[in-house]
Every structure is written in structure tokens, then in C-alpha cells.
Length: 83
Image (tube, rainbow, N blue to C red):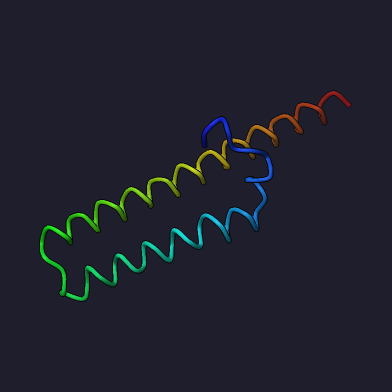
């Protein structure tokens, strides 16, 4: 995630509805086009490249969210140990 991303972007509903859902739909459309057999080989490669890029972006978003959650859990555990 870039430095311009606000905390509200970590909201589950926001992440799922705005990012994941639209990217997943887009990726599914690309896969359907590829599987249709109606594209030229060059277009298949272009669509595949775009789909892979979007999957990588989704994976980065999930990895960053996971790291943030792990850090928060670790912080919480440290606070609990103090008591």
C-alpha cells in the first residue's frame, strides 16, 4: 500500500467491496475472455499479464494487512505481559 492510503482503507467492507470484488470480477472477465478462444494469441498474453498483475496487487494488499494485524497482536501481547 502506498503512503497515501488512509486507515479507512483497512476497513474489511471497504477492502472487499471496492478492491477485491472489482479486481476479482475483472480477473474473472479476463479469464473468461482467454478461455473463450476468441482472442488472438497476442491478446491472450496481454490479458494474462494484466490478470497476473492484479492478482499480485491483491496478494500484496493481503500481505500488508496480515503484517499489520500481526504487529497489532504482538503489541497487544506485549501490553498484556506488562500487567
